[in-house]
Amino acid sequence: MIEIKNVSVSFGDKKIIDNMCLLLPDTGLVTFSGASGSGKTTLLRTLLGLQKYSGEISMNRELVFSAVFQESSLLPWLTAAENVAAVCEINEENVQKAKYLLSQVGFEGDDFDKLPNELSVGMARRVAAARAIMIDADVLILDEPFAGLDEDNISAVADLLLSKRDEKLIILVTHVGDFSADFDYKIGNND
Image (cartoon, rainbow, N blue to C red; front, side):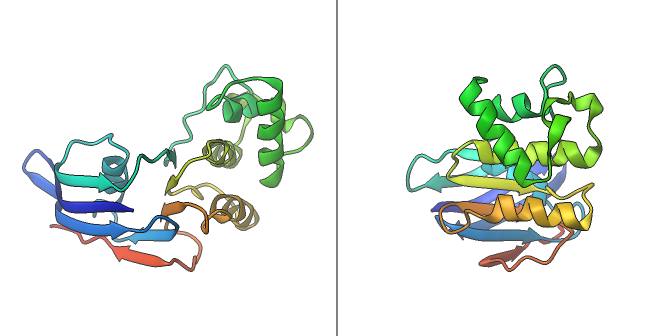
């Protein structure tokens, strides 16, 4: 369980998150919705410890986090399969597991061996999704993981990313697809 208590985030004089209080469960799908600029990504970055904030975020145990951000951020010198395996250790066993995960989102043939500059935007997004699943995390944070994907690939990536919702907490921010969330929190705009 993650407790967000009186959390505020400001950029200069602009308050993005104002005195937020939430209690997030150990498992299930939680979605954050709201207008562009309302603080959804800022909240995700705050949960990951990447953003300064005031208030308190506490957890009932030590949690392992994994994330898919809006940018794929692949290492340009590694193949698609190696980019997925790199979050663990690049060895034969992990590369095979990475290839399996990539095959779940439509990779085949020589796709596994392509470098990031040889991948389409949609393929890079699918590599980022598989990489997030490669880590056996307690909390999976997904910030627009379906950007740049067509309908078939959205379905394949959603099946992969959301398959563990009974075992882990999945926090999703997206403007595409219609997902049946266990909890949906509207993030307000503080203009």
